[in-house]
Image (tube, rainbow, N blue to C red; front, side, top):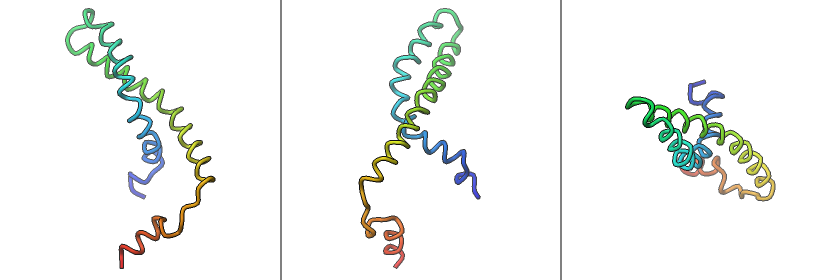
Length: 98
């Protein structure tokens, strides 16, 4: 088993799309608020560090429930649609290796 096929990589893969969706709204709201709150109080790298920590923490906190919802929703949708055999990944690999 390689590092990219382990459970931690699968967990990160499940979080990747929710993180992508949520990082800009969190950065533009909570990250900026954290930066502005400490801008005059802390020296130069302090406000940026606070903004990065606030953005990373809240992005992960918001992304985890969204990832759970995504897993639930895709599970529900997969029961509604049937993928023809000619469109499955195994069929594509089999035809491309000929």
